[in-house]
Image 1 (spheres, rainbow, N blue to C red):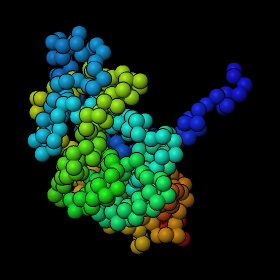
Image 2 (cartoon, rainbow, N blue to C red):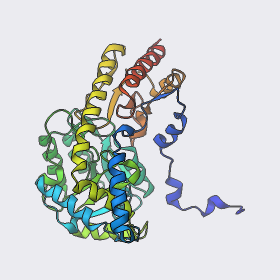
Image 3 (cartoon, rainbow, N blue to C red):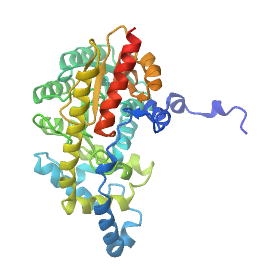
Image 4 (cartoon, helix red, strand yellow):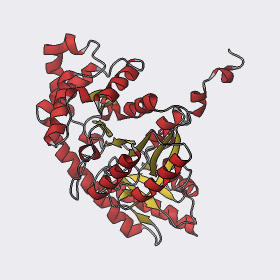
Length: 402
């Protein structure tokens, strides 16, 4: 055994923290606990029969090819299909603008790898996706949080904070946003706010990272154009994934950006895992090509719409006065705000006793704020358990209020 092992770890390793959500999921695996903690898709949405059909056909016709190593950029068939889908939505995307990653989380790791030096500043929402905050932290980024309102990241505050940072010789490297059904807040940026964020980025010549894992899971309201589509060419890096709309276990995501950025991402990925598994990429390509994706997505959207309605109606029915929540137009999450004097960490202890779990809002705040907030997932549990879980959570809140 190495006696002074701790002294051998890098500074980067010292900054690393376990995911609060991943660790929490370990505590909520007991069958009697209703867990709103994970961002898990509904298992009933997995297209098992169609996958069996595709895999059987693939192994017979393409087995030797798809079981081999693949290009770092990803399976050409899948990339071409994704490019055509984006082009049909009005985005200027060519094949050399897209690389397949091992889920979009890998994209969130590779981007700071190519852009961040220890001590560099980046802008993110208050609150913002935990996985992104972890990735940025691991590379030594100094995260500056910008408050959200009901339209997403406040552009006026963003401009003010960036101006101040530049005066301090701390110009940010990029702005990180989740404009559609933001995780954890569930908020969707209207087109007007997206343009305001772009204007700030143009004014200060900043890059925007647009994280878009939930965009296609919309069950209310009007679809908004992507920031990538609205901004000047080369201003935005767009992240996508199949984890919420197809099969999370396949871990397929992608990065869309100008060619110079993609080239750096390719080099960074080659040193990480060489390539995303070609086998699952080709399965996804055939799944899309056969028209199964859009058909199954329609069912997922309807399923989640119903589950969201049950959860919201249950909040209205059971929650005590003083508790508020977001009502997202899509995605997987609701965000609750407790009265300011309450602490969600204290609530969590009571909630576990009541056999219900959630994620503490503080995990999504880069500044340690959000102590009276929490996130609930509505996609994983059944409609019946969503209502029962809210009932238990409301009971726990009432106990803490006493």
